[in-house]
Amino acid sequence: MSQGIRDRAVEIRRTFHRYPEPSWREFLTTSRLVDELEALGVDELHVGSDVLVSESRMSVPDDAVLEDWFEKARANGAREDVLEKTKGGHTGVVAVVNKGDGPVLGLRVDIDALPRPESTDESHYPNQEGFRSENDGAMHACGHDSHMTMGLGTIEAIQQSDFSGTLKVFFQPAEEVLGGGKPMSESPLVDDVEALLAVHIGLDHPSGEVVAGSDKPLAVRQSRVTFTGESAHAGLAPNEGRNVMQAIGTAIQNLYAIPRHRDGLTRVNVGWADVGEATNVIADDGELGIEIRAETNELLDYMNEKVERTLRAAADMHDVEVETELLSIAPREDSDEAAVDAVATAAEGVEGVTSVVRRADFGASEDATYLMQAVKENGGIAAFPIIGTDHPGGHHTATFDVNEEDIFVGIDVLSGALLELETRI
Image 1 (cartoon, rainbow, N blue to C red):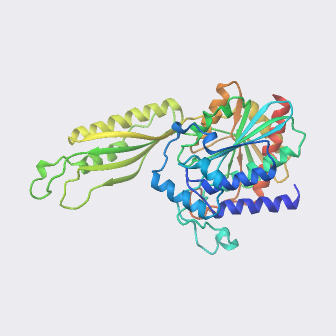
Image 2: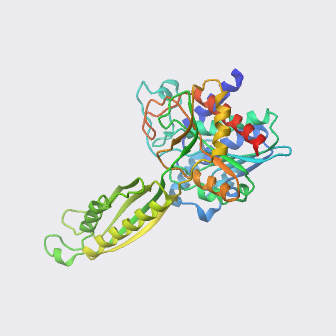
């Protein structure tokens, strides 16, 4: 990889980092991806509403939020033709490179940022170098700016190689809310993919280490729970109320008391609660944000049944009503050995790789599993490699960053793995 290509990759990554956009609001990001892909001369470019099944999107913000970010993207120079394709929260891109007869291979990278502020500490490298987030309250705190850069770099590497076949790169929106994988996996663009790689940087693997295929991404389900009771004067007639505060308190305590399961890891968390208005008012409505995770899809079903029973019991105990709204859900899907072997073989020959780990637990959750699942259901194979990096702050923290040298490692590993897969399928 020439120094000029390396410098351009760093510039692209820093541009993405400077203008992060949260899930379903990646309007400027999509526009900039289109610019870069057109400059690379990809053979096909599918944008926004053309790459998603709209009704399958999950955790889409309300119209006012989308409109605010849409206009912000326009003010920052997003292309009108891309804005037209992405309006209403239909973000994302699929790029296709056709290089003769051969297999159809896929690469999935995510493009969204997190709704959290970035560190202003003088020791924070993006702050030092002038590419800290300029969108207040949003930050690339999980490396998706690096993933996009790897995707673009892999396209260029494949274009310059003797690869024979078709490469599709899925620049997927809304991973952070587990909302974009399902609608993209249902696109016809996935139907003919014979092997798929997803990728993540970091995850506590150091620079120089490559995990050829991660396993056990936790199945996950996120929900909004609404309790409805009846208001009353807390001092004059508390008996006339139906107290949502009591129901929510009971629910929270007992959700955390759900028994763990002997067959594998299970998790439950109440991420937020919104209830009550004044000290002298019996609360008549309130909401909870609940997340459950599990080591298998079956255990996720177990946790969900227990959660629903707990919520109903809390509501019945305090004579209130309860409704649960699914926000997002994603399954577990493990890496296939054939794809893992291709990544491991490629990684062994990459400069900067000092350790190749064939398999490791993913540890968190991902909605790339929907695309992996779709490819497998069509008879293909998939793997989710991890490119190690020495990140100074943990994922989703204000000081998260990556060693930019590891982006080049990722490009070489991914392009090398695709070349390996081309010869094996």
